[in-house]
Length: 227
Length: 227
DNA sequence: AAAAAAGTAAGGATGATCCTTACTTTTTTC
DNA sequence: GAAAAAAGTAAGGATCATCCTTACTTTTTT
Image 1 (tube, each protein chain N blue to C red):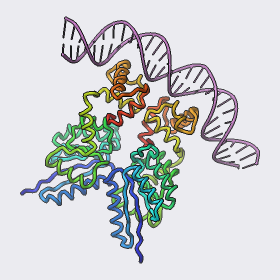
Image 2: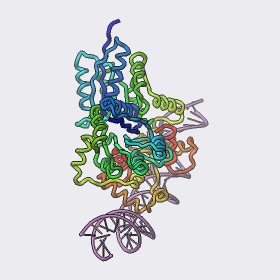
Image 3: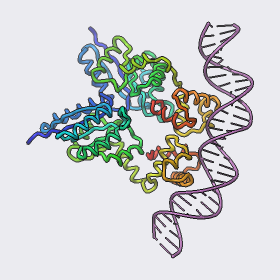
Image 4: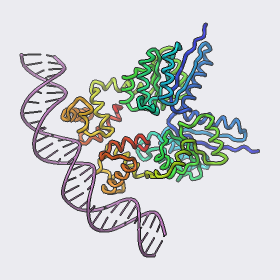
């Protein structure tokens, strides 16, 4: 049996986590001697995006990306989260399998990531033990997708709550959170003030917010990890 | 030389993290054969508090707690975060060393944790590699406190800038940054609106800000690490 | 005790948000 | 491909929040 080498990119801003992932891959290699992993890591959007660009230019394939969603944004403010990064990976490296790994476990967020990234794996960090990580790797290599407990539960109970936020919604929340005024938003987004107001009202409905001011909206959006 | 046994409680809602901490302690034991650790873990406020109560009732000492700040709250809503938990540990087990470990690198928050808990160690998860964890354990056992890179940076900034901004200034900036309105601030701070406005004008002068809106003030305050 | 700094109170000018209504454009669905 | 639904635009006025000024009081400093 011939050897198979997989390239893996691990993106997470916590070294202890990237290390745990690396160990899991190495351990898997030991169990399956014909499989070898070539692993690189990145801790923020900028260095991750740089690696992605390199892969897309070079001959070398990138088989698997482990992608944390909550990441420090890129310096130019273009890539605001792992989700934005995932969108670019899907475009630039369409054959690469994305494994989302995040600590968020509410439906809004999970749905939105599913819809936007369609990942081959979805791990909630609260669920994942070292042992489960090995199983996840095995499933992803042989019979994707792999979703961890909480994700499966959430998918099952997706009845009424399948609203999601798109790029523009997220950008609105982000800009508001850094203090941008409504009157300035049309210069930043391809929308009129009235259009942005409409979206804001919808967001408040989605999050079940009665109060008319934005503080609570931003608070909940932060809590849910949108910003 | 006689053996020394330390009890350790690790509180974190991510199994991969608690596992990394455990590995570090075990590795440290191997390096220092006279030292043995007895380790227990908890993943949420309820189970952690239960363990703390047990320790405080029993004869057994608890030497070290690793405490994540962002934790799922207790079911009765009494303990909302690791910070609340830490306050109780300080009361119930005054001799236990608390090592705060959090992903929070918000300067205001770090400051408030310091003031409230006065921990013997302060780790920012973004900083910590497995190797540094070993060093941290060593320092905490032999010559506490141990503060990781980011923490030290934040503390330095605070010291060199402290003569300019006091607690109230920082609180004003913090509240504004989460979207609190001026008209609501007098309910949160012991100051009138006019007083807060005066301080805000002074802050803008200090930071050399011409523009009259708050966005730039908050941006610079974040850049300088005040919030 | 005097001077300086910080805070309070009130009113008005200005600016920003929010809501409504009516209309247009885009997207979905059958 | 026509009809229906959803999303966006434009303009107005009502409401709310901020910001600035002035005059006054309290606290702190020296």
